[in-house]
Structures are given as C-alpha cells and as structure tokens.
Amino acid sequence: MSSNENGAPRFPIPRQCPFHLPREYDEMRGTPQAGDVTMWNGQNVKVFTRYEDVKNVLADNRFSGNPAVHGFPSLSPARDAVLQAEPAFIRMDPPEHGRQRRMLTREFMIKRIAALRPHIEKTFVGLLEGLKARGNTAELNEDLFLPFTSTVIADLLDVPHEDHAFFQEKSHDRVLLDVDPSIPKAASAAILGYLEKLVEARMDNADGRDDIISHLIVDQVREGHLTQRELVVMADLLLMAGHETTANQMALGLHSLLTHPDQLEMMRNDPELIKSAIEEMLRFHTIVHYNAFRTAVEDIEYNGELIPKGQGVIALIAAANHDPNVFECPEKFDITRKADHHVAFSYGIHQCLGQPLARAELLTVFSTIFDHLPNLRLAIPAQEIQTKGDHFVLGLQKLPVVWDNE
Image (cartoon, rainbow, N blue to C red; front, top):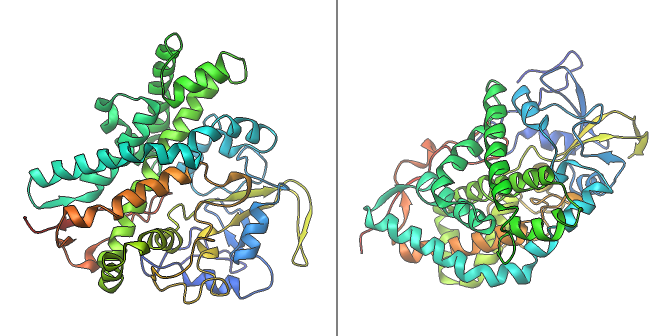
C-alpha cells in the first residue's frame, strides 16, 4: 500500500481480504482524531471511521456534499468524470437539496412501496421461473438480480423493457473507478441523452399516467417548480440508485448466506429472521463503500481538532458499520444481530430516499429464492468468487450457482 511523505495511506485503501474492510480503518478508529489519507492527486483528506463521528459529520450541514465546492475529495479521474455532469439533488446542499428531495417523498413512502409488493413479487417469481426453464445453473448477477432491479425501477419510471440491457451496460460502466475517464463520462452522457428524449416524448401525454416521471411532469414541471432538464437528471439518479446498488446487495447477501450455511439454515427454519438477515447484509457489506465525501465550508472544531474551511473529509460509513463499540464482533456475519441502526443508507439529510424500495426487493428475494431453487449452492469454490474492487459500488464480479432439478 502506498503512502505520502507523511505516512498517510493512499485512498482507496486496498482490502487484504475482498470481503473484509482494510485493517487501517481499525487503526484510525483507535485514535482520538480523524485519520489522514492521500488521494490519487496528492490531496490530503481527513477520514472519520467511528460510528458516532460518521453520523455527526453527516448530520452537520457545515460539511458540504457538493462536488463543486473547493476541496471536495477526488476519488479517481473516472469518478470525477461522473461528478462533472449536472448534479442531482443528492449532490446539493440545503435549501435546494431539500426542495427537490421533497418532490419525490410520496413516491417512496413505506405505504406506497407496500402497495407495490405484489408487483415486485410477481416480477421476481417470473424471472425465477424463466431461469429454471433454461436449466439448473446460472450467473445470478446478469441472469437474475440485475434484470429484477432494472425491471422494477424501469416500471416505476415507465421505461420500455426492451431498453433494460442498455441501462445495465451503461450503469456498469459508470461506476468503474480505475478506467479512462472517457468510459464513465460516455456512459453518463448516453443515459442522460436517452432520458432526455423519453421525458420530451412524455411531456404532452403525462396526464393520467401512474409513473414517477409523469407525476413529476404534472406536479412539478408544469407548475414551474422543476425544469425539464432537472427532471432528466432526477430520473437518471433514480434509475442508477434503483438498479446497480440493490442488485449488488442481493448478490453479496446471497453469497454470505451460501458461505455461512449455519446462518442460512437458521433463516430457513425461522422466516422471522429474514428481516434481521437483510439488515445484517446491509451492515456487513455497506456496498456504497466510498460514499459520503464532504468538504468543510467553514472552520470547524471537532474532537479538539481544527478542520479548516476547504478541507476535504470522508465519513466512512463502511467503517462506522464495523465499529466494535457499536456492533459486537463486527467482522462476524450474524443474522440474529439487531443491526437496523446501521448507516448503510447513509445518515442525515442525504440518507437514501429509496431505502423502502430496496428493503422490499431484498425481502422478496430472500423470502422466495430458496423455495424456487432447491439446494441452491455455489457452482465454483468460494475462494474463487471475487468482488468488484474497482467499482464505486461494491459487488461480485460473478455469482455462478447451481440448484437441484425438481
């Protein structure tokens, strides 16, 4: 692992084991003040790793989440290429962040998502049945989880099904970190261009339709609260957040159950454990592992240390979810753990708006898949399964499985 002349490690810090966090996070957590890391461009950034510190930083509006603010941490040239596009509200500060976020609140209320559960379940079972009809082996990333999440979010936006493959490909390219910046930049441009045409075509026939884009056209764009271009950027955010992230969480969660057969057996014997198993998956993996970059917009004294204006900081939600002072034996995957206070969906005003939908999809998957695919197991040795270490969103390169024919 490389470091600068002051000994600060280079960030991102590589994992010694693909399924466990870097040990340097524990070392940083053991000191009273924030840790120091060096980014690819030589920038010094402060890192918070303790659970309470991470929550406090994310709840403090003196730390900006806007990449355009001077001092915002640069993760990689490829990531910068994505952040240079028009910002969605998750990359805005108050008051504009809250104004746009409230436009979507009703779409993701728990009651509304609960009403969608039958459609979500029907979609997943249909994909499972199609999988079984083709044999008894599959690569679940491409064959099941990505088609499932992309279908659900595309249905909510009313995006044509025949274009799902396009979004899967471009979404994949956009979260790559260690590639030429032209690759994620082109992927972003392609998705925005597609959505721009879709929104334009829907502007005149949104009345009476029950999809999110149409609702926003009628309630926000026509009323002058949102521009047509802002709607395009918002739809882009929803498509990305509702597709790539949850699919990767499904793959990692299933992998954890298959490699911890004792936990799987407990869950199969007691379906009441499914919800707590999902919260443990979310905590254990924290798939948006490089999330929560911020910049101090004024001098801030924190834990006896001055964080000067313009200082980049990272609130490491993955490290917070593995804080042993909050989660006993955090490196142990334990579905009986009460883990619903994790920060896998971030914290504060930028907490993930779509988490009720993500939980509904995860609940559908893990309450259904083992009944439809008997004796589901890995098709290759567990040590050959590799994570997507070069992605902004943590996931598995492939998840090949096999099951018994009925």
